[in-house]
Image (cartoon, rainbow, N blue to C red; front, side, top):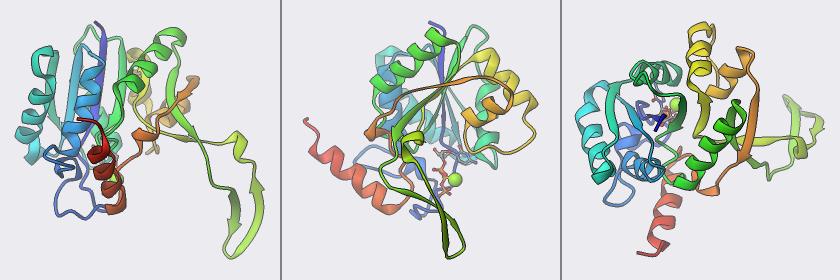
Length: 227
Ligand code: CTP
Ligand code: MG
């Protein structure tokens, strides 16, 4: 009863190019945000905070209440900021005092399943560390300087990071308070503040919808799912 999920949905979706903020684009009859929240609520968190563009707070509330259904945990929607990091900070400011474990999740990872959320929560509670779901890197990775290939990176020691990423609430709050730079994800910000990170197995379904091709992939995955 002490887990919260902050879902950041305040981006503009430039690369998707759908003419409006990405989280409110439909996959089927449900938006990207709604699909993401269906996965989040399946894990029965005590609180969900959606961070939306300031002019989309009402729409986000509709998605949040429909996804919550009978479960009705504490649900709120707050306005985001100019960067993802600012949007996460806005979400953290809305956490209920009793929350001890916080997950931060990209709305754009619309098909991330509830069992992934559970896996991250369990690992945070078991280790106390920051937890990052990862997938193996499938491509061979080269180091390049301009045109020249200068080296090979052993992909066995690499992993691709996803969300939701989970943290002890006190650790995440403290790391955000001292952050002096923009980090590429929450786990990098937490690591910069000196806290250890652990990985758990990610999910192929937790890919981020970034481009029109990603949206097509999400659409075809949904249309093939059993009713
Ligand atoms: N995000 C946010 N606030 C921002 C920027 C991003 O809440 N100022 C959220 C997005 O809504 C998304 C997640 O962070 O769920 C990951 O960001 P990304 O995939 O880059 O989404 P956008 O920034 O919307 O897309 P783009 O970079 O193509 O404009
Ligand atoms: Mg972006």
